[in-house]
Image (cartoon, one colour):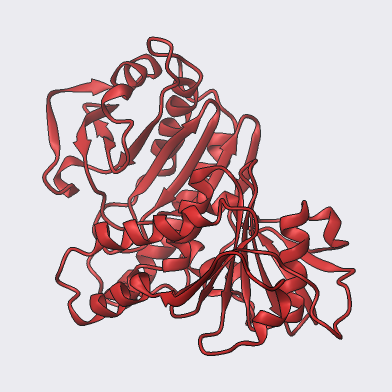
Length: 378
């Protein structure tokens, strides 16, 4: 191939380069050290181009899945180095893909000897390192880690075939934006300590991963009005509340030096797994599980919802006011009604087709605001 031949790659590369230049400028103002050089736009474009064509190939019948980290070997921590750097080609990536398809493995890529080369494999990447992930044939995600402690990457662009979605960071600037959405956009998430693990983000990722669809309702701790919006008796009420996840997060604040990831991940997967049961799973804002399989009902004296605002954090996307039935199936309809009646609550709704919606009450719009965030969870 005589240069990039995947046109959307140029748009994504320019957006990614500008994103990292802004980050570098902000880091310079705060005297934060630069973890990795900003990759030139043409390098990012070339990596996207090769990754796209590799995604359309097959290796012994398997679809290649891999992640490419654009950084020099000197900026990586304990990398696996190839004795000879490999030219970065679609066929070469396809051959090596079985070795790096597991999570947290990345092929290290950087220009060398006048060409783009794969120099080795890394298990983790520094913040602000541009990563290009092959998620499926023709589906690429350009992203980065917001901090050393973050496990969820922040997406910059999503490319699917000839379509490109550039993430709009300004979507988190509204005053009523839920924290989970701000965190997914790389805004408002603390950089260190226990709070660097955004539990709702972890729950959303796990909910989407089980592929069965589900609803998670987050209600205020100590309040009982939410019980007026579910059918009684609840078949799967939990008493006393299951507090393991909340306990782990409190312990993590006290002992941040201990390795909590496995324990927190297991507790997250347990609760997220319950969302696959028909009905809604209910947790408090202190991450205490109080019910699952709950049937949502309209609260007495409250009107039926007939309009909801829908947005997607994509550059150029405009808010839409639609009837809740246009948002999705019964999960979405009941979640919108619940948030309408319980305005301190937040609802996370996963569809079987991969769509994911965060519903919250918007005082500025005086209605439920449904945010489509599946592009942030890829």
